[in-house]
Length: 463
Image (cartoon, rainbow, N blue to C red; front, side):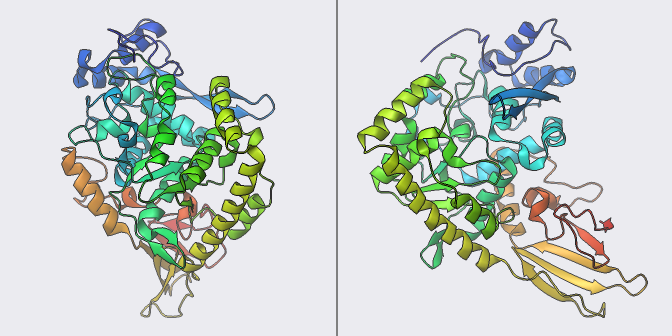
């Protein structure tokens, strides 16, 4: 583990442009990356507010060159005042306790989405194409730099380290929006358990590498470099601890999880440990046809990629020792068929026809469509249908946010009040993404009965 008085390379993959109080890019990086004990939170917020002129590169992917390219700029994201500035350094905590709860994951991600940086990412890439690479670069690294603590350890700085109860295997190129919905779906509906569902409470502790590992790679006291964390075989240690809920493989429509070699390694470790593996999906984004077309493609784990030749040699060694990639291809193909069946059952259990409009406003028709109760009336004066959609799990997530707001001593936040009334901004508790809403948008919708696309563009009036 490294220790340094300052941390010049803390945000090594974040390019900050000169501006504000800093006269050069290197000076800005030094200021933002200085260890937190040497930079009070008030200074951090003052600096970041002046860094409105600073911008961070937005990366895209060039499929021809297979390399990241710069496709835009985003403003630096102000660090949330509620996020603790210290905690147990990751070097002092066993990897099996690098955990955070599902509700904490949701809470942190919502803080990211309230920033102008998030809006710039969505405008540049599209709401479903913002990835965990983006989240790490624009939020995780700058908000944890200098602390020696991962997001998970900062969010649990006053609690004794708790063991992982569910391992999450995911691709960094996966959609943030779909990942967010996967975690809400997981708590709302549980996990497949034969013909039933196994309840998974929002307090369940998960290992999610972007938030569980210390990402800045800055050499501060109490921290660990990425290489040091990988040398500890953190993924394998967590899986071998046999978490009570096993391991979930998180699938998004934007990324193939088994093109990431570390996910291949995690599947191999889970198979060797004999723990249960189940699929995790955004029920609003997937269809049976989508997954069937993906499942029809042959698995070729030997072609999976990772960012380091050293990591590839490490994984090759372990996979080969257990029988090679061909064996793993067969195992994953069987697992994928099982997950396809799980998704089919899940969608059948949660999807019903949206509604049939009534001829009289006095009589409301109510149907459930993937967790939404939709009430429709017939408007007399212009033949418009008024639709009010209510999410079934709204109260559950309000309770989670209230508890976490109290834990982090938040007295004022966008999700607590909605101007001009003193009511909750309920959109903060909803799923993310236009596909999540019955007609593409939250709120009350006035509709003329024509078909709407996924974005709800044909719905003329929304309130």
